[in-house]
Every structure is written in structure tokens, then in C-alpha cells.
Amino acid sequence: MMNIASTAAIADRRGRWLARWACALLLGPLLLSPVPAAAEYGDVILNRNAEQEGVPPVIFPHWFHRIRFRCKVCHTELGFEMRVGANPMEMSGMTEGQYCGACHNGEIAWGLDQCVMCHSGKPGLSTDIRGGHETSGPGRW
Amino acid sequence: MMGMERALSRMSLLLVLLLASSALAGQGRFTALSADGLHDPKVPAIELLQQPADGMGSLPPSSSGNMVDWNEAVRGGYIRPRATLLEEGEVRLLDTDILMPRTGDALVVRFPHREHTEWLDCSNCHPKPFAEEAGKTPVSMLQILMGDYCGQCHGAVAFPLTECARCHSVSHDEYREYRSNR
Image (cartoon, rainbow over all chains, first blue to last red; front, side):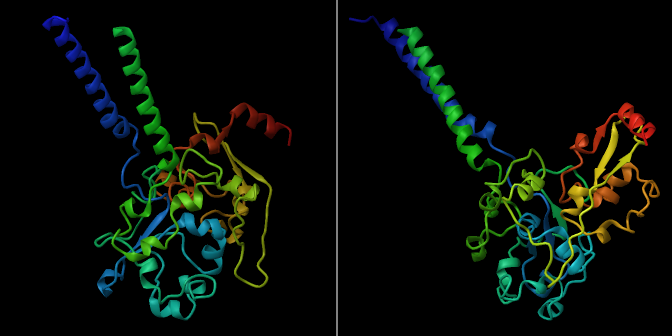
């Protein structure tokens, strides 16, 4: 039969063992998790007109487009200046094939009637270029 | 008995950490759109848009920017981005290097036309912001950090400005040797 002291020691050890498990379970993922809420590198927010006109801001993902097109397609053929906010895009022009409308016409990519596919940003975001793995470069300066 | 228990608890701790890190590594390179801080998770389109992990998860990795080696992705045939929307678009590849030696203590910059012309048209960089003639356009690192010249793309969509050695890659000795052999 065990005496009280050794029973207490075993209980103590079990307690510490449990505490270690709990620590590992709680702290492990916390320590190893990446920075939360990181936009993809090169994500552009367009909100010069959108919210004023009653629709959410546009999120333009560079990564999605560069998988499918080389830079020069948009930045030469479609006339996009390489500066966020420098392009006077209007929905009326896009319906005539300008800017995004060159592809987003229901043939190459989804049509302009699919508003929320592009106008999918959180309210209140301002026009900007963002990214998770960045250097505080042009998007921030 | 006590030693075994301690060993067991250490092993279990290690196991939990390993499991947690591998679970995160699987998805950790990319953030889901609903959690990226830009997309409104309530917008129904979030279900239809391609997730970064789906688009880029199988592309050759890098350690910065989109965490993708985009040049290797094209050359290795992982992606085949279109070069034109026009019937007869022109792809003008140029395979010359420009060396920029006035870098102070830093290594000389090697600018490869090849990698740039695979993605861009001559007119994207010439004559603005860079004159065609090498050395004609003075560029400082401060201007680049402010988002001009190379910084128009690098630091925004092309690999970020923390990747010093990818541009500053030629020693001054090598550069002198190259100059004297011309």
C-alpha cells in the first residue's frame, strides 16, 4: 500500500505532465502560425469610385493574373499605368472594352455583370497595393 | 518509471509541435481569401474565386514576394501565361545584361534583360523611366525604395527590395575584369 506522500508525488507528476501537454497544444500552433491577415503580395485595392457609387471596393490579385498573362498584356496592350490609382477606370468604359473590360466580357473571363466577383473587398479599404511578404516599398511609401 | 514518464512527455511535446508545424506548412505559404484582410468573407463570390493555395501551391517556391519563383514557373512549363491579346502580338526577347557599377560598398548590380523581356515589353521601361542607352539614367537606391525606377515593380509585384543579392550580385573585381576584356 502506498503512503500519502508518494501518492501526492504521483498526482503532482501527472499534473505537470498534463500541464506540458496543454502548453504544447496551446502554444505550439501560436508560435508557429504565420502573420495573420496577410494579403497576397501585389494585391491591389481599387476604391477611388467604388464605395462612393455604392459598391464594395475591388480587390485585384496580381498573382492570379500573372499565372495567365504576362505583365505586358495589361501594362502595354490594355494601357494600365504601373502605378496604383493612376488609371482612370470607369465601368462605362469597361463595357466598351477598356481596361478590365478587354477580358472581362464573358468570353475570356467572367463578364462585368458578375459585380461581386471583383467588388469583393471589405468596406472602408482605401486604394493601395498590398502584400504579405513585402519590404514597405511602393505600397507603403 | 519516472524517467520513462518524463521521456514520454518530452516526446509527446515534440510530436505535438511537429504535427502543428506540418499542418501549418501545408497551408501556411498562402492565406485563404476569407482571412486575407482584404476580401469581405460575407461576399458569396469568396466561394467562387480561386484560392492562392490552389493557384500557386504547386508552383516552384521562393522565399519572398508571392513565395513563387515566377521565372522558373514559366521556364519549367508550370504556367503558360499569354503574351498578347492581339492576333499578332510580338514577343521581343533580349538576352543582354546591364551592369551597374556605381554601387558604393555594395556589389555591382547585374540587370538581366532576358528575365525582364520574358514578362515585359521594351516600352514598359523605355524610354521611361530608363533611357535606352546604358548608364544614361542615374538611379539611386533611395529612389528605388521610394517606388521609382526598379522600385515601380520590385517591392510591389516583382521580388521585394529585401532580396539585395539577387541584383547586387557581381563583385567589383569581376566587373573590372569584364571591363578590361572589352
